[in-house]
Structure formats: C-alpha cells, structure tokens
Length: 215
Length: 215
DNA sequence: ATCGTTTCCTAGTGATCACTATGGAAGTCG
DNA sequence: CGACTTCCATAGTGATCACTAGGAAACGAT
Image (tube, each protein chain N blue to C red):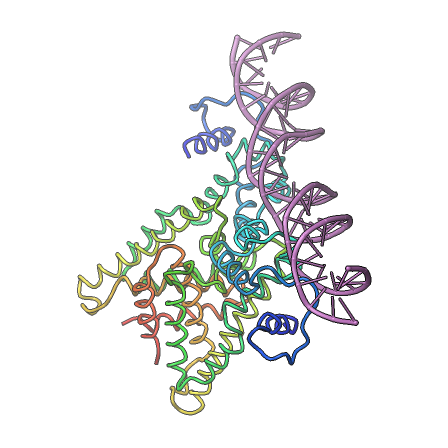
C-alpha cells in the first residue's frame, strides 16, 4: 500500500514540485491504475478463479513478468482490485455509520448495490458478492478474506441499526442482527439476479420490496 | 434420462420378476447413485469449475473412464447432480403452485432454503445458488442452464403470488414480480451468508425479517 | 468352453494453469 | 560519456486441466 502511494507520486512528478525523491531506473511503461481497472473488470465479469493470468496480461497489454513485478501475484492483484472496486472498505463503513438514520443507511446501501449491479459500462453483478463465492481449496484463503469484508459491511449496518434502536428511533423489540442479515442477503442476492439477467428497474423494485420489511 | 431408468431397473433385477431384458456384459462395479451423490457434495462444496474430474474420481472411488462411461462428461454429471439435488425442478414448481397460499409458498421456500443451507451433513449454502455464479467463457453455457433453473423457481413463486392477488387474498396494488424477486434474492443471499459462516438460527431469523415485508 | 458385450484400469493426450530465470533495453544518475 | 537501477519480452518451468485409446477382465447367452 505504501509503495503504491510512492509510485503514484512518482508518476505524477511532471505536475508536482520536486520535493519527493525521483525514482531512478527505467520508468513503468504502462498506466498502473488503468491496468488495475482492467483487471478489476475481468475479475468482476468472470470471477477470481476463472480469470487466468493470461487473460489478465492480454487485456492489460502487458506480459506476465510485468504483472508480477507491479502487483505481486494473482491473489494480491485481485485483492487490490477489490479494494479499488469498493473505494476502500473504511469509506463504506464510514458511509453507513454516518448516515442520517439506519433506514437511510440501509436504503442507500441497497440502491447503491442495485445501481452498481446494473451499470451500462460495467459487468453485471457485484464484484464483492459474486467473484469468489465457491472456491477450490487453493483459493480458500482468498475467499475467506472476501467473506470477512462482506461481514464487515453487514456488521456496520447492524451497528447502525442498533444505534437507532438504542436512541428510540426504532422499536425496542427490533432484531438488528436479523434486519441487517436480511438486507445484506438482498444485496448478495441482487448480484446473482443481475448476473442472471435482471435489469436495473427490477433490482430497484426489489429494493422497495425489501424495504417494506422495515418496521 | 431414459437410459438411467433402464439401468436402475436392470440393477434391481434380483428383487423383480424377469420381465425386463437383463443386460449382458460386465456389470457396473460401483453404485451409480451413490457416486452421483458424492459428486453432488463435491460440486456443492467447491462449485462446478473448482471441482476437477480428478477430485471427482478420487471421491467416487472410480477411474476417469468409468466416470465418462457412466455420466457422459463433467458438464452432464454436474447437471445430473443439480437435478438430484433439487429432486426435480418440476417437483419444486408443483410444490410452489400447490401451496395453500402465496404466503405459505414463500415462507416454505425460504425456510427450506435456510435449512438446506445449514445441514449438519451437507456443505454450507445452496448448490443451485452458489455452485456456478461466475464462470469462464467455457462454462458460460452451463451457467446459463443454472440461471434458467433459478428463473423458473422465481417465476413459479411470482405466478403463485399473482394468483393470490387475482383472488383478492393480497392487495390489488401488490407487485408480484418485485415480491418474488425480493424473496428469491433472499434465497440466493442466504446461500452466500451460509458459506460465509452464518448458522441455521441466523438464516431462520433472516427469513422472519424478510417475511415482514409481506403485505 | 466360447462368443459378444460391457466395464475395468493403465497410461497417456495436448492444452492450459500460475509463475519465473535470463539477459537485453531504457531510463536516471554522477 | 559510463555506471547504476529498473523494467522489458522471450521462453520457458512443472503441475494440473478435461478427456481418451487400448487391452484385459467379468459378465450373460449359447
């Protein structure tokens, strides 16, 4: 992560004052971030395991040694693509925690998922939800990393609901764990529906249907 | 399918009268159905693409040529395993259509999914929902077959809801498509949650939360 | 016993997997 | 310029992928 920041600073040198040490040696011949976005789209469409390094290098316009030098290995490239996709897990958590109400947080999350699952210029479905659901034993550790990210988002939503319960904005008998679980299941499920062909209006209608469960 | 019936009749010959021609040649040395169930469990746990033929033959206790002779190829074995898992897609459709009310059909489907996703002796999650969400281009046709099965179940649920709307058992303004979509998204999502570690009580609580959206 | 039929295992096929050793090319420095 | 650093492409590595050719073995029928 630190090296990534350094590198992007170095790449921006032409437009910034010379206060950071310039890297010596041959500069990178490709746009690292553009290559990362390309990889993200491939993982998004075909999933982690079904996307081969050969697929990646072909789409990114680089050779395998360049990929490994720039991103480590397939696993780290994937995790970096997921981070790039989410815009940082912390940003999502803060977005949920900082919503005006738990209901707003829930609706915002569902609508964002529905829109993100059905973008015109992006693959259908959600990268986080769908790119690594089942896995070979080799990829199990990567799968678990993604599962942990999914649980963090669900936990953030649950915490926001609990806050509204404690503040009396929701009935005291409300079950925050099950409400968050339900909404997060809808997020996961909408991704599969999108991959199976559901369009944006369908998913937004599902959001309305799901929000009808709100107390 | 027909050959399967013939074969199982032939295998049951010891206990039935000699009205069916007995097969000549060396008999099958393994229990075809038990092998199918073993394959089903492997696909269930690891998904279609991550389960190799070598994994299958090792677990089934047979060699690759036996697998290919008995099941065709990996794709057909998988589809047969899915059919065995569902107990026949028609049975599911009839179950939904024949429920006492749309609400019963919905609740039954969700509870069956929650229980099936968290069996003690079976892998977590749902074979239909999780074994082939994303795929390589090679497996895209198989993925689409599974997607069609998923859509059939959702369509059966939607049809059952529409019937109750027409019969006045549900408010005339109800949107059957979105209600069915919501519930089916929960089914899909619960499978992912189960694979991510959610237990039976959690999923049953999610069912209650989702059913709270019922008019 | 012999024949026809079917299944059995051994031992592979070429293709693709993630990944890398090597050496030259392309830069920045003094 | 020459020294140093870093990235580049070529050309592979062994492992695993789905799948199968070929011949021996096990059956019912005769």
